[in-house]
View 1: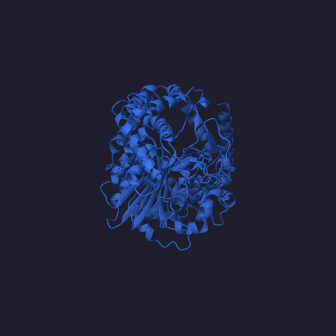
View 2: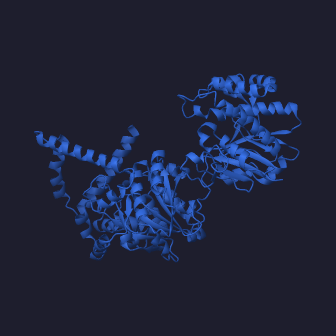
View 3: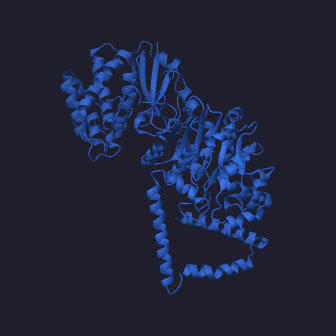
Length: 638
């Protein structure tokens, strides 16, 4: 007996283990997401109807493309049947078992394996979820339950019933019985013998096809547009209520389970069979234009004989911007771009952030978890452009090193000038922070995380991902995930030439960097002559200030993308506003009160706390601590 249960997924999540389970990405034809499984967009399909048909696009795909399985089933990524050995568990008012277990324990506890499932199929033709009583939701019967819903319109359901009775008039008494009953098989979950599945599918989609000619979705919101999926739940109940009376099929009912929290446990497989170079970039919608400039620069400096497999770890990037990003590489057969939602990782909901950093900044910590087949992966920050072929980095022999990266010369300056960490990490001087807080035996080997080559083959052997997660949970960090990686990878870093991560200077190239060790400063100047990658770290981005170093590289790359006109318009608007404010200031008889205060206080502060003095360091420490107290007070009041 061959058995396949298809699990509909629409976002990254936990995937059931076992050959009988087939995860299926529903709505794949209208999604830019990659969630680590095949889509419902191949063969004969209705994938594009997913916003209206929900999991029925998986049902249709099974019907049209699985021609060999003896039994076919459908479940959802969070909703499954309880196949454990006839054990009953407590249900909530919605008739489901709310599961709180970790996913592997959950799968074991509820018999989600081929052996337990096969045992339930003995002398059974169909397995359906246990009937649910709509009176638990305050409804009188199934018809009333549909009518009462805020997101359903009874006229649509009635239209479906009229079509059903026109096509199959013998169902009339069954329709009346179901509508007056308070019990039904909800959620479109099932497991059926092939011939019954074929008959039900022909019957169901025959009704829904005609229904498309009878209803309009004008002014329907996103939830209301799922009308075909909702109606199918009722039609399934009507079909099997009729079949149970008119034929000799055996139906078994099982409890439904619902698991809320689940971590992605799948894998992103390579796009290209040979010569694959996986590249990871992470950004949200605000940085889509910068990510586009980076991808364009990678494209312009690529080798046509090599394949570039780009994965964007995205945080709510719009469909419009995903389409734009995809268009950049669409004409290049040696390029692929895919998207993965970083919100698939629940741990990001509780991570420490500060300033402009969002939880998504920790996404690169999950690279060893996402990629299970690749030996190396290159990560590049979104606020960069490259000026060289990045595939060269894959040729570097990492040996026993876990990563390859460039030393962070800004941190060298922080150590020299005694910069203080934030209030969450004790306002320590940079050198003390690196040695004592991070535990780095050689603080001078602190690396910058804007470009990293991950040695995934070695990381899998050493279970490095576990170390990253444990370090993440341990305490807050000044530079967030960059500090976590420096702590975990310390002593296992192959340092790249500085040209592979050249800091653009953030507007103070001639002030900050000459103060570094001359050997470092010399390397900095040499790397800037022929940079392989420019990193626009800091607040002075080229789209904010065109006068910063290497801004032309960003604008030249952006020029070949769909964002150029709108970004340049935004920049000109900012310049116009700045000019207007300057003119208004010149025409004003006096400066604003705040600016007058700053102008008077700044010389006094500089006199009392001279730059580089111990007094200034103490003053800055006190200021940061007071700022932290103020913020806590402000948040507690608000």
